[in-house]
Image (cartoon, rainbow, N blue to C red):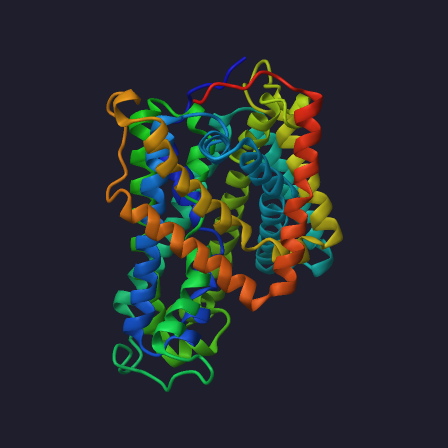
Length: 445
């Protein structure tokens, strides 16, 4: 059995957009506004974050076009650095990063869905688990059904943001919103330090483009379509994010945006009145449900690839004979996510490894440098994508990723240390599987 190439360029682009836009854009802008002192700086920070995300997407586009394999990022780390690096990424992904995200996003979805229908808080966890179960079944039956659901939900979430932007054109603006400023936040230090502090939540909100690489083996003509999807999807998200922040600033002003913890809801209430609360709750419910679908669809290919390398539970390398999906990997990830949702431990675990994503982002972009040396462009597939700005763009991205990790460690050293410990638990597991299933050294991809 092998994966079916069932995803076209539109499907792949929806994977990119759906993987980036979750609930963050509805909340994060107020944190950024608290850390910066003028609208120009706020919008500049979001634009800068978009440029960094695009730099990452460029590198992932080159890697994806060269190695369109199931598991994406795991494969690049395995062959570009060391199999242990790839294993630890997949270990962290299953243990906390993705499973914790699924649990947290499912709870968020349930919260807003129940708010819409007047449900009670007691129903949150059961509804969250039901959502995980339903989407797991959809993705069990094939990548195409999961992708079709995702396409509809991504279109709906983008349409909701477009309505918000469109309404802002006709709504009144906050007086002097473009020129409004305030004194630097006490203790924030220089503008440069404050700008750096604002970039951390922005970069986490921009994360997610790597999902398309996970399903590289299921994309039609991946040498062309995977880079196209990564670049088109990331550019679209940058435009959406910057525009939405203009809407928030125009509706509330800088000080108003910094003063609210629910900027999307407040902006919608100003434009639509009482109906704004229903509108934004619906938008967040749709957005989180779509993100949940993608989180179940794409990362399971990483666990499949690890098992296929005989470095993880062997049964996870099995594809369903009819649907061509890693059905057991889907079941395992979803079951663990439900456990995290039931126990409520996902919040604490997620805080422990919140920096892990950017550790692996930086290491993955590093593999662009290693592959350029070990696998010259002349030996790669014809027409493959080449990341522009090499090697400057890649080196800058790696430095920025290191800065993000350092910032998170500096802000919460205890949680970072515990997170590093959780990831390090994978080291003996890796060597146990390596010894149990020793095989001749695999040729480099």
